[in-house]
Length: 68
Image (cartoon, helix red, strand yellow):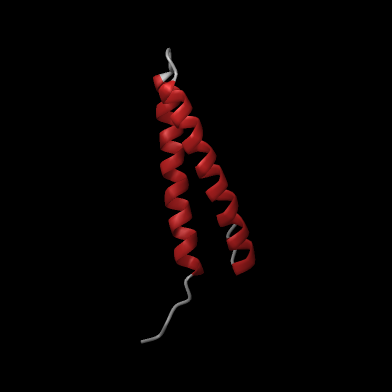
């Protein structure tokens, strides 16, 4: 489902930023733990990168197009 409404996009952007920040914290905690699960750490990092890309796409959609 493609969300076109700028208010909905802004809300989704805020949700993704919170999730990205939470993942960052979880990655830091897991990386610092003794007996860490490398597979889980890799999966969290990949999810974080996916979120970062999604956030960038939404931010670019929220920037209005200016005709030069």
